[in-house]
Image (tube, rainbow, N blue to C red; front, side, top):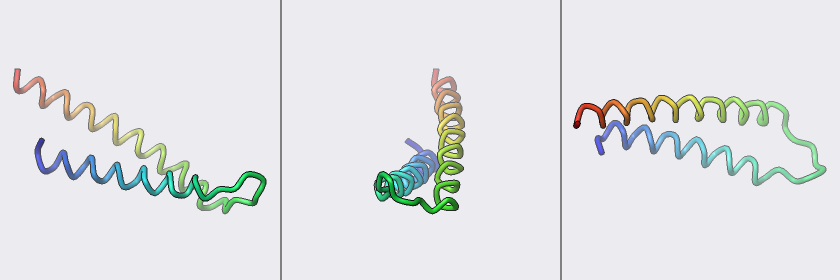
Length: 66
């Protein structure tokens, strides 16, 4: 795998880890920081877009090798 691809995967993994850590800290029935929650939702959307882009890159790389 190329260094750029590795870096992209590491970046996405880091963002997902941060989102998961935030979600694990939420206690049922307790107030949630609305700003932090909105940021987590936004980050989830960004991760989804990043994964879609990464999938396109991997597909292009696979097509170039064929």
